[in-house]
Length: 156
Figure: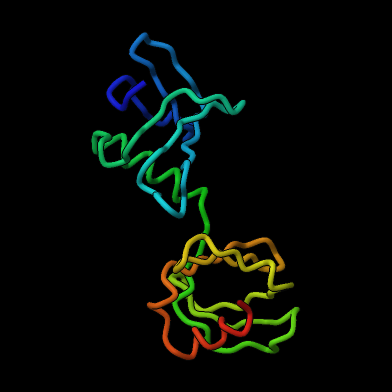
């Protein structure tokens, strides 16, 4: 199914309803990114509440503006991956340690349980899981300031 084979709208209680070209309604569909970090704008499945794929979108940009807005709005409400912009301090270079960080959503603290909670997604991208299960993203190691990179080097 391509992007033009369906319509998408919200019902009165705010759930997404996908209507196929054949007139079939699927209430409560959820958009899911295939590659949320590496290619967030590509490969999006619209799945039913029971987890079955109903529609596939190759590229978000290919969707008509009203449908794209609904998909982006739903994704934003479900995804919470703050991006670390700077590491202000680290309580200890042994784990567990508490990090004071600046993210795209403001300053916060995270607790790193162990070095294995820092996962390298690519040469420049890291995903850090804190003790509460929140995932923090470092999109570009080289974009961090020197102090932040030095803190990270002690754990990598």
